[in-house]
Amino acid sequence: MTTKVHDLVDKEKLTEDDLIEGAIGIEEASAKRVYLYRISTSAADLEKIDAQLEALQIPLSTERTPSVSPTKKPKMMYALNDPTALRVKWNEQHIRTKVDKKNERFDPVPEPKIVVLVVDKKTGLVQIRYDKPGDKHIHEIDGEPKAQAYFDYYREQAENLLGLPLEPIELRTGLEKTLKMVPPVVTVAHVVDEDEEGIQSKRTQKKIGKDLRDTKAWNQMMQDPMVRTYEEAPLRWKHGMTGGKLTREVFSNVDAANGQVRFDAHCSEEEIDYVLAQLV
Image (cartoon, rainbow, N blue to C red; front, side, top):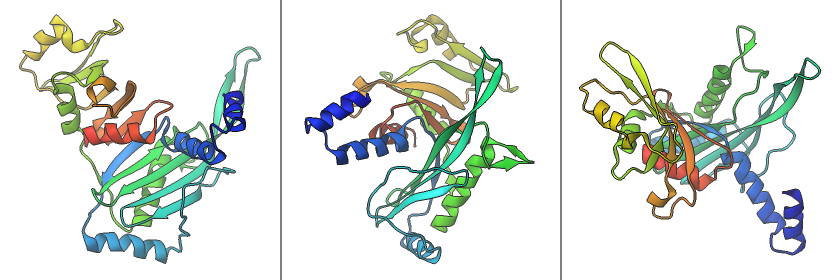
């Protein structure tokens, strides 16, 4: 990849600005766990954001910048604020424990982590995009690094910057709507069902290219009067059903109960925005 990129730059088919913009896009959109919230869009509340940023003396940037020099302590890379959006990026360094089976040891591997706050002031939709937390970091509960402490820290940072409370978004309705669309817009790996006594079951289609909902077993199950909830589902969005908005199949795992959507590697900003628009 490095050789190809250098070659494109040398041949002036790719500018250095294009390269920097591409790198920023990768680190701000790929392999993220996105938690969704809402804020008020009243004029008075939106004015509070500007006042809060000024009160906190947050230096504002005019453009996005790459992540550099992560440390254990979270560090703000930039903050962009205009009448339509607020966008903030932080980085920090975590440690992943790598297992060396050959030498029977555990090796610490430093990994930079990127967190991005994206606020749409027109719709009130708020995204907090997280990299997967490492094994060791400074966000602890009872002296132990915990993923929840990492997630909670940046939610608190977001609320502090906005000066407004973040209201979690209910994703069960959006997930149900997506799963019931005809013709199907997603390929479903499995669906979780729940009866009145709280029993859950998982249905899986293991044949590649086959959809669970095309099976006889699924049709029989759908006629069962059990109460169904829409708590979680891994979805593969069919790009052919998006009117050209997606150019490839995009994977997302929807955790409706926690208002989180997880994306796999190499996602773009446009792909994340498309998927979230279908669910919210």
